[in-house]
Length: 246
Image (cartoon, rainbow, N blue to C red; front, side, top):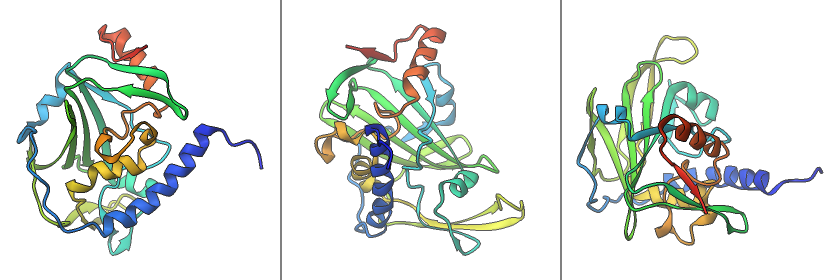
């Protein structure tokens, strides 16, 4: 066997975690999330603000579960390529509290990031074919940790924070990604109460979190290989410092 780099080992371990996590979420208690101190309504035009920076997703693996028991015309769907043909994911960060401070030697497994209070990270999910809004996931850095919220579309331009119990079943009519013909997409939504545990267990950057309560963003973290170059491009274009290395 050839030499396995630490970075590759992290990727392999996280892929295993993702499989285990799917089983964990499917048996998650039918609970209602506690009230969150987050905006109750978000407008789609807010994502056009200059302060909202879109960053690339981590394409090494499909870490973010988009639902439970996903079925396309009665056939279970789980492969990243098929999910990517159905859903369109976009990621945004808003650095209201200033740049993220990077400690290159913060952990034996890699750098660590210190997120300022006010950092907001958004994960927008749409149906790829119609561009219809499906779900918005939002986490914000507070003085005592991270707050997580899930939003559903009220209309084509409005997201509303949700507090649903259990895993609501959803059935949508979409164009089949391979044939273009009408198809049925069925799934169960993921309960918001599982978000932080999911990030702690499956994020590529989970090594920087000591316990579940510390876990923050999944894709916007030090283990994402593209973010250093992305930050440099943003800084050259906007003169805004995104990552400040100690």
